Length: 245
Image (tube, rainbow, N blue to C red):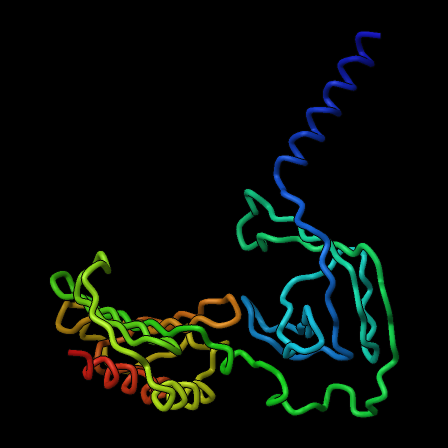
């Protein structure tokens, strides 16, 4: 009897610990496209295309849906449950999804599955939410952030005393256009031939591109001497910041 009681207590404690690690969110409906696409996360992978409403554009879905066996060539309407983890493991997603119900599964009438133009979807470059340029030595600091609405700059390491101006549609379009030539997947491996920053002869800089919930950070380089693959983008970011009074 005592052994059974202890076993039951242990089971209850285990269930409490499991339940306390996540918070169940309301059930939601999503739509899944009939094919997957190449996407850029921590590593090269294939992503499903997903949307919450048929009037929306497709967006990349980087996770998995537990219990859902995706079959290419079919569009789906699903009901899923999202569990937000309070303490996710390293490199783990903070939200886990599980299938509640397949509302519909329809065979695609498109005979060229996977051959859609990338421009029909929000690819990583076109879905950028912000670009950050940082450069510093022991005594000098420069921070520039550009997004669709604002260009801001500061030399304050605490990022409190910033100056900013509106980012025009023309300026943002120019930035997005340059992003198409940036190899996000390999940006952390790009190199230059100068290494003045190693001896404090030049500021050490890096570029961060925020897109689809991911942050792509370049390897460090000397301020003023970025890798050729991102040179045009870096120079544009610096030029835009110089117009701030």
